[in-house]
Every structure is written in C-alpha cells, then in structure tokens.
Image (cartoon, rainbow, N blue to C red; front, side, top):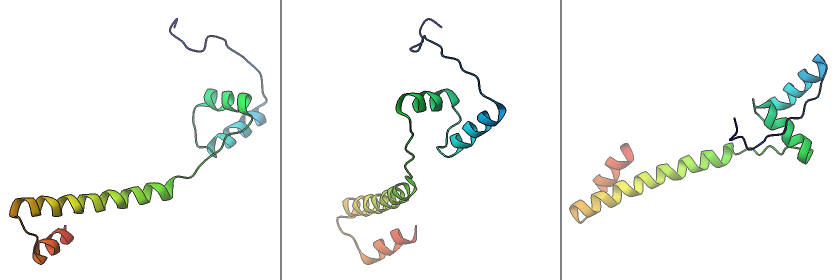
Length: 93
C-alpha cells in the first residue's frame, strides 16, 4: 500500500437518492469506477463523453482494405503478375 500514488483520502456522505443520481450519471460516461468519476468531477467539474463508434467502424473498414491490399501484394510478389482471377479470388474471401 505504500506504493500508492494517491495517499490522501477524502470522504463525504450522500443520501441514497444522491448516490443513485451519481450512479445514473456514471452510466452516461460509461464508467464503473466511482472514485475516478468523483475525482474527475471534483477537479474539473465536468466529464466530456466522446462517441468513437463511427471512427471504430471506419478503422475496421480500413483494416479490411489493408488486408486485401496485402493479399494482392503477396500474390503479385509470388507470381510476378496479378491476374483478374486472382483479384476475384481475393474478393471472394
């Protein structure tokens, strides 16, 4: 326990309703670490939630394109040529 970065403990009391409200707000982030959430709120006063789902979807598509390019490059390097049937075979994967 002497290796802890945060050595000072701050305690405060809330009602059951206040705790439920904090937990509801935590679900919007989403986080299950109440200490981290409360620390962020106490220091900064707000938490910004960024939706990365579109970026993740585009990244997945780019990765698929990269796999296809690698397959074409591997085939071209192995045979010295890329034929239409090679491309159709790769598209079928």
